[in-house]
Length: 117
Length: 116
Image 1: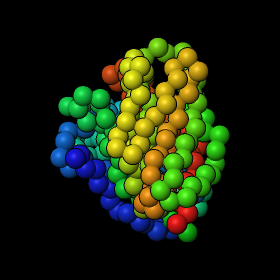
Image 2: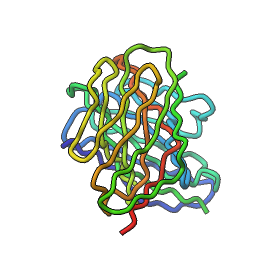
Image 3: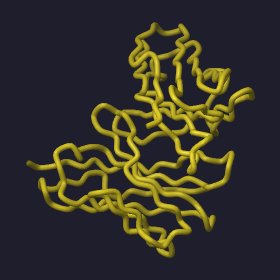
Image 4: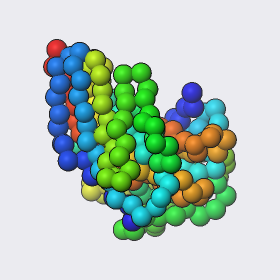
């Protein structure tokens, strides 16, 4: 089956620093990737849609200057949390859409737990 | 905008018994996809089952089946012969069929506990 990886799985950073999270589709090409945020015991909230070779589309209320998304290739999208603050601590999940699949299925990465101290 | 509602924050079931998780949604679209995802303690999202709205037949995947009532905008998940490994958060999700608009809208989730 299709596999999506995320790196790192856990990261702790100091307030004011930036942190980059990578999302890779390992065995398929993903023209579109999605970034979600999940608070403890809550549902997934879509932050942005990342399209290869073009600017990401952000959901209402998501600061595009704070959450920088780069989808530079058909297998890699990155999310950079800039000038991180404790309120950015959360679980971040990416998914990748299989452009070759019948249902344009989304496959999820294992998530990245970000802790800002 | 589409909305997805899961009215059961928590459910529990005895091992080997059957449990049904509820989901309702609101949309003005006539064609769409509905999904149930499972999120175990590892936090990895796993697709359980998919239903295409234009299909009247309810989807089934082994012990998992759905009751899709399009007019009522209801999409429940039935888990038969519950197993300890079924313990997880279950999310109902909606997706438009349109190419370029495949974002998922999730419900708030139902935490399922399996009682040995």
